Length: 143
Length: 143
DNA sequence: TATTCCGTTGACGTGAACGTAAAGCAAGAT
DNA sequence: ATCTTGCTTTACGTTCACGTCAACGGAATA
Image (cartoon, rainbow over all chains, first blue to last red; front, side):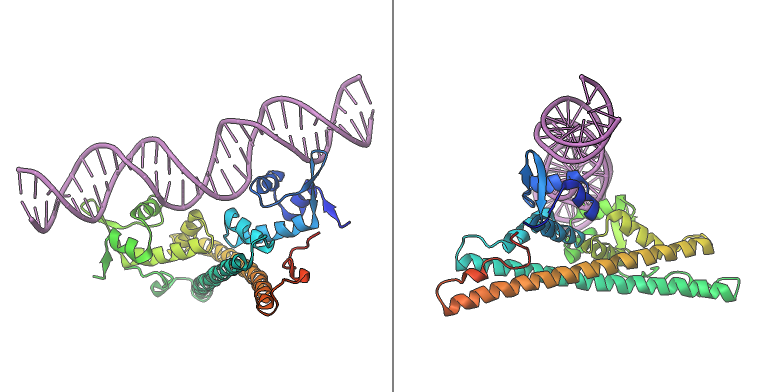
C-alpha cells in the first residue's frame, strides 16, 4: 500500500490552496478516495497534480488538462479511439512546440532590451551625460 | 511618413477582433492617433501589437505586457529608474526561462505518451489481441 | 436621397479559475 | 465537557479578457 497524502500536505508541497484541489476534483481532474468524508490522495493523484500544475504554467486550461489526463488512462474504446488519442497527442505537441518558439522569440527580444539597458548604464558610468543616440531601445520604432 | 493601418487591417493581419484592439487601447497598451474619430494605427502600434500578442501566447497578462512595453519606452526617470527597469527585464527573462523548462518537460512527457500509443498501435498491427502489459501508459502510476 | 459600409462609444454579459465567507462535523487536547 | 484544529459542503463574489448588443456618425455608392 503506497503512500497517501492529506489535502494539507499537497497544498504545502505544491503551494496551492485546498480550495484549488477541491475545485480540480469538482472539475474531474482529481478523484481522491475518502476516509469518512476527508479526502485522501494517492500517489497517482499526486502525479496527476504535478502534470496539471505544469500544464497550467504553460498555459493549458483545466479543460485541456483534463482531456490530456484522460488520454493517459486509456478508455475502453478500440483502435479507432486509440488513433484518435494519438491525434490529440500530436496536436498538443505541436501547440507546445509553437509556444516554445514564441518563448524563444520573446526571450531574444527581452535580452536585446537588457543589453540596451546595460549599454546605457555602462555609458553613464563613463560619461556623466547621456548620449541622445541612446534614447529609445531600438526594437520598437519611434515612428 | 511611414505606413499606417486601419483597425480592420490589423484585425485581419493578426486575427483579433476590433473589440480586442479597442480594449487594448482602453487598457493603455496601444494609443493609435485619430483621423476624426476613427483610429489610425502607426507602425509602432503594429510592432507593439506583435509583442502583446506574442506575450499573450506565452502566458503574460495584459498588465504584465503593459509593464514590459512601458519599459521599452524609457521614461524621464534617471539612472535609478533605469536600474529598476533592468531588474524587471531580468525577472521577465527568468520567468520565461522557467517556462521554457516547463514546456520541455511537458513535451518530453507527451512524447513518451505518443510513443506508448504508437507501440500499442504497432502491436495491434502484428497480433490481433492486445497484451495486458501494454495497458496504462506508464507515466502515471496505477497505484 | 436612401442605402450600405465601416467605424464609433457605452453598457452589460460571459467563461475560466479560483477566492471568500458561513456553517457544520469529527477527533484529539486541556 | 468544552475548545481548538482540520476538514467538509454550499453558495455567492471576483478578476481577467474579452463578447455582444444597441444606438449612432460619417463617407461613398446606387
